Length: 460
Image (cartoon, rainbow, N blue to C red; front, side):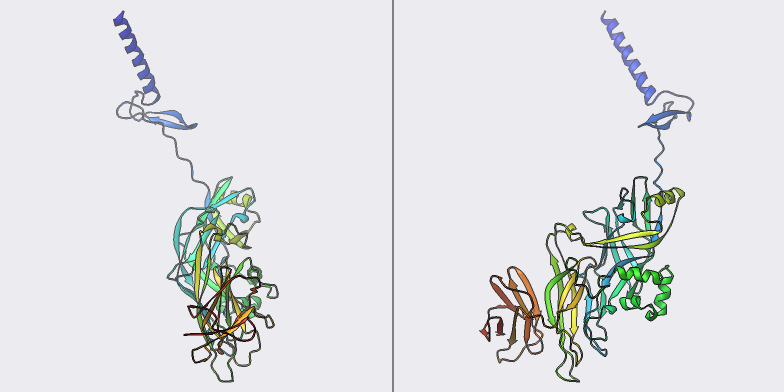
C-alpha cells in the first residue's frame, strides 16, 4: 500500500510538471517554431529554442504616442524697464541683471487646449544657447510643484543691462520687450493627454523690441522689421505684443498685485545751475519674499503657430486645440512654488537735466512675472510721511547716503539728495517703534528741528 502511494505521488508530480512546462517552457520541435500566446490581454508569440523548449510569451511594445513639433511665432521672455534718463543724452542711469537675477518667465500652455484635455511639461532640464541680439544661455525645466509649468531663466553668467534714455523722467517707449522668436516645441499627444518640452537642440533666437517702435512701426529699424518678418511677425502681431505689455495704458494705476514695492525710493533732482553735472546714485535693488501661499497673477496672450508631425498627431492636435492656428501662452507668478527667494539688480541713477520740472522722487517695483525691476515717479504734491536731513560732524550736508527706517517689521529705504535731505512717502500713522539706519549705521535721532517728523542725523 505504501509503494502504491509513492507511485501515485510521483505521477501527480509528473503531471503537474508537464502542465507547467506546457504553459511556460513546453517541449517543442523544431527550433524556431512559433505559437500564439497571450500576456496581460495582449497577443504575442512563443519561440521554440535550441533546448527544445518554448521561451516566454513575447508581446510587441506599445507604439509611441503620436508626436510632432509646434512652432509659435514668439514667446515673450521678459520686459526690461528703462530707468529714468537725462534730457539731451549722456545719461549715466543703468540697470544690470547679473548673477543674482533669474530674469525670465514661467509659462504654461494648458489654455491652448480644450478644458478637458490635460497638457503637462516633460520632466527634464537643460540649457538653450541664445542667438540674435544677445549671447549666453537660458536654463529650462519643469516647475517644482506644477507639472503644467515650465521655468526658463537666464543663467548666472549671462548679464543683461539697460542704459538710461536721452530724456528726463520715465519714458515707457524705451522699455524693451524681449522675444524668443519661433520657439520649437516637441509635443506628444494621446487622445486624453499631452506632454511638451522645448527642442533641446534649438538655438534660442532672442530679439528685443522697443515699446515705442511697436506703437509707431514706421520708426522701427528695418533690420528689426525684417528679422521679425522672417518668423511671420507682422504689424498685426505688434498690437498683440503691446496688449500683453504691462504699461500699455500708462494712465492706469500700477498693478500692485504684479508689481511689488521694494519700499525703496530715491531722489531724482536736476543740477543747481546750467552746466553743472547731474547727480549720480548707485544701489542694489533687491526683492525678497518668504512663503507665498498662492498667486493668481498671470499674463496671457495668444500667438500664431505652425505644426508638423505624423498624420495621427495632426489629427489629434486639430481636435484638441482650443482655437485653430493659435497657441496660448500663460506666463505665471511662481513665488508660491518656492520656499522664498531673492532677486537683485545693480542700479545707477543719473539725475535729470537742468530745467527739469517733473517729479523729484522715484519708487522701485519688482515685476513678479518677468523678474525685472520697474521705476515709477512719486507725483508732485504727495506729502512725505517722514523727512529730515543728514549732515557730517561739521554740519556739512551729505548727499547720496542711504537712510533706512524699520517700522512694524518693514524696512523702508531711501537716499539723500545733494542737499542731504531724505523723504519717506509711506504713511507711518499708527506705526510702533521706529529704528533708523544711516549709511549702514544703527542710530537714533541726534537732534530735532521743526515738528517731530523732521529728523536730523549727524554721522560720527
